[in-house]
Amino acid sequence: MGTGIKSPYELYRWQVEALDFLKNSKSKIKILESPTGSGKTLVSLIYALEDCDNCKIVFLTRTNSQVENVFRESRLLGLKKVISFMGRGETCLFKKVNPEMREGDPEEQSRLCQRLVKDRMEGKEGCFYETDYDMGWVADIMRPQDLVNLGDQFGFCPYFAQRELLKDAKVVVSTYSYLLSPYIRERFMDWIETPMEKIIVIFDEAHNVPEFLRMINSASFSVADINKARDEVEKYGDKTFNNLSLSLSLNYIEEALEYIFSDGPRILTPDDAKEAFMKSFSSGTIEISRLLEQMVYVGEGIKEMKLNEGKLPRSYIYRTAVLSQLLMEDSGAEFVRIVDDSEQRINLRFLDVSNQLNFLKQFKSVLFISGTLTPFEKFKDELGIEEANERAISVPYLESNLRVLYTDEVNLSYYKRLESEEKLLEILEDFINRTSYNTMVLATSYEQLSKIRDLNFKRKIFFERKNITNLELADMIESFKQNGGVLMGVINGRLSEGLDLPGKFLEVAIIAGIPYPKPSPETNAMETYYDMKFKKGWYYAYEAVAIMKLKQALGRLIRSPKDRGVAIILDSRAKRFKKALPNLYRSENLVEDTVNFLNQ
Image 1 (cartoon, rainbow, N blue to C red):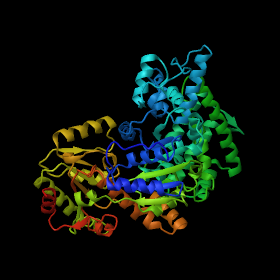
Image 2: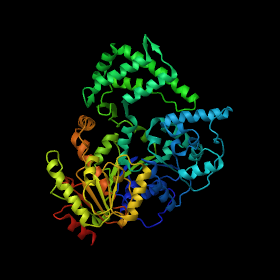
Image 3: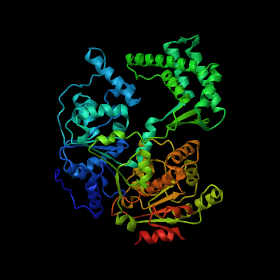
Image 4: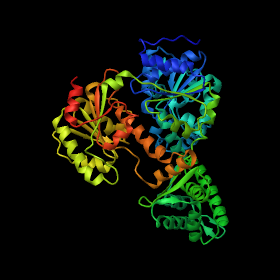
């Protein structure tokens, strides 16, 4: 069967177990949980290559920064024709000339790109990078930067070059968007030129898939959008529909939002939205809907005019009209409208993604892999997966090399938070000043992180600011690796997932409380949705989310079988997660227990 591909080294027992599970699974959809550093990527590639010799593998990651691991394992396996496929935002060379290409969503960038290429072919001023050529393989593995460098050197478009290479590629590495976004997926599958039944799809860090689907289907509507729509009226001219001008209509829409914001943060019903719009327009919903349709038409015209100007085809008049319609439409349980009066914004939050992955049944097989997929029932319920085989792989080094401690001295539940927070800060300051291990501290909020930062520490502190740039974060992590000290961030931030600090670069991780989602209209909406659909409101909205975040944070400590570390949860409520964290122990003396374990 298949290629008979061999691992570059002898597989560990748990990798053999994972590979056997994938090979013996009778279901088209396979769900594999295996801890960080256990070799999930290698195992999934070996399985896919052996399962179907003449199939194409599409390996998907959440972000562009996570693709390097796939290239590393592909090199170890000696694979050929491995290519990454990235969007215009990462591969377009013309963006150096036209800043418009640096912004916009994929659809806007696509339309502008097509116009610029068409203009050049018609002898007009457009994109001067070649798109019509015979692009051959110049390396076994083509990373994004490889193609960008070649395109820059020889004057061809890296984006169109990777499209040509897709047809003959064995492994395609890309991001979730290329399959999960319907607009992009249709074109992506056309470019691959491979029947779906000859494709094996692997979703890496798959615990992110449900939230990613919600994100790409959600939107927000703010007063700032209306102000930008006014700028378009000023530039492209006012229009009048049924004796009502476009500029006056925008004033009425803003007034409707002000009525909505005046009642504070909450879940907005379509009837409440209709009432606010009818009050501001002094008109019925039928007349308002007709007006909004006219605004959509005007917005489409502005998009075309912007294209002619060499700009992204974006219209805020169009956006304002469409989102105003959505506010008043009855969408059932599909999404909710969350009023954020402090930001003068309404978030249209998508809830139900259970019908978004029906197309996966057409592939030969689909693998969801991650270190944090349990509880499996939540993952399958959210994605509407009915037929699947799942397996959680345990690894001996995780239980022997990781000790998870908690203390009964702190309880940050709602009713005990005030009296416990001072004790938490006291324990933190004492622990860090009495130890010398490279340590990460993860707070449950930026407000809590600020209080921790103000403590009197005697060691070098590295602090993840709320709006820190990617470059600043990378520089800070590199400085931490070189100098040691204490790295501080929030459990929902970039330090808590995907960060690789192996060995003695990181030996202790402290979590300041249980990372339950913050109570809010959005969280309440999720709880209500989970309760209505699955009868598991609190568990899915709070408990399961906290388990996943804890396990993700703990994953920063043990990156390989050789790593050793101690995690400390400063909250007595940690004891309720004993089933999810089998190596969890109560500590009477955190410093002593940590030193004893790490010195073994």
